[in-house]
Length: 358
Image 1: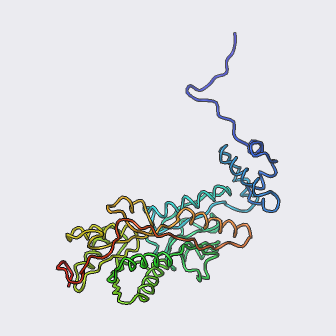
Image 2: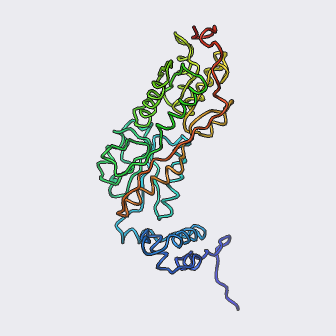
Image 3: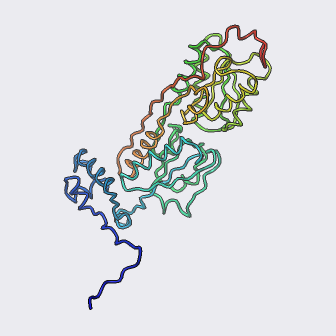
């Protein structure tokens, strides 16, 4: 009688686990080189070209090193915390995507943690952050929001934050001031002189920079009238703020400069509800260049922020700190994207009879 080995119905034999030898063979390098690259100790010992070949081969083969054993050897958890103001905003999802991509290349995992709007203290999501994390990246947070995590004495890379904050190990920024200047320059070049800034009512460095840059840019243009209308971050909040700006006393603004695309979407709704048109009667601008910017009609003039590259730069800075190297602290350029929501102001705007006009 021929005996057969019993098998569990419906279960396939487990696939062979990819090893560092497989990665070395695919990349055309030694196993030692694979270990150096994936352990982030290759600089000066493996060429940049071969290091990239190793990382590419590891991704292609789905290779995952034994991080538990390596962590015991290195005294690291190989876990990074990314703190953001909200999980529902596309911008921060893209920051996470960029950060996680670089972290994976170094064998690190990223835990995403929201601190509502970056204005309240971010609670330590672990019993002891110092025991469970190697470092923290915080994006667009208020100065006091990270006090509990700073107390853990972990490397802290701040994104979109005050570069003079001595509590940060490194700071990576977007050129937010340049973006605000590009928007104001675009509006004034079109002929707008009555501009209302729908300013995010959030205490954070990034929104303070926007307000200061808008004020300074318009102060340099003779004959401009700048008003500021505070608003929460949201479509409904933007609608209410824009309605107040357009229907209030005094000359109606010919342009609404909004601190982000979501506020701008609400502003466009307010313009239409008042029986006005974008951009024929009122121009509207946003900030961020979210998918929403091209979902509205007309499409929004806005400032494009390279969110994924931003997350990548932040993670590279943290990896450098953890490797004992100086962190690069770049300021990434932003780009004005003119679209259909802006146009020259209507002729004789100051004399037309309409809500809030003269």
